[in-house]
View 1 (cartoon, rainbow, N blue to C red):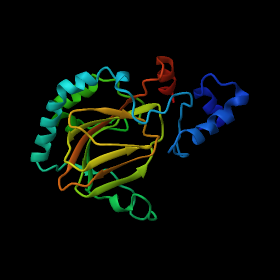
View 2 (view 1 turned 90 degrees about the horizontal axis):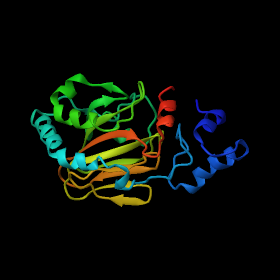
View 3 (view 1 turned 90 degrees about the vertical axis):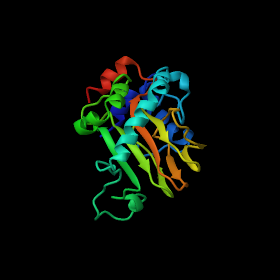
Length: 240
């Protein structure tokens, strides 16, 4: 549980008497921020979509994305048998924003890592993708991160507005197969995926996605450390 004492540890440059005001001001100033966020670094700029210059290794992705696409295409040709619904809550829970997608293959995924745990079978099927990911600054936290997965959004499917739990990580999308009429919104910015062009965003900002085409959309999604984190802060987080 994050208490005000815990929050003090991650709100740099604030005196104790200013802490509560600074923390609450984030919820006012940062549009679309979820009050359900569990771990928020308050002094960082909110990166709805981060500038590319924070991620010099995007050029490495651009040089290798075709290999990732080829491995995904092989998985697709094999029938996507190992893919599973991204949303899988118990059926007995009350209706909520995820009800339409719960246990539905309309949003289908194959995890290479999930909450820090490596899926050996999937990784063996995608050696070039794994090699690329392991060369990047993935966020490593025991039993929490990284997560890395192929995400397939079926035609005429909407992922409803939602938020993540921490801005200590940054979410990367590498678009692989993008039909027309697909879009993604984070905060007040709506954009289209472009095949082979990665982008990074803060998923504590409300975001949603649409596939309004007649074909599936495929994206490789993974998390890295927030580029504003210092090495000392990363070490601190890894002690949780």
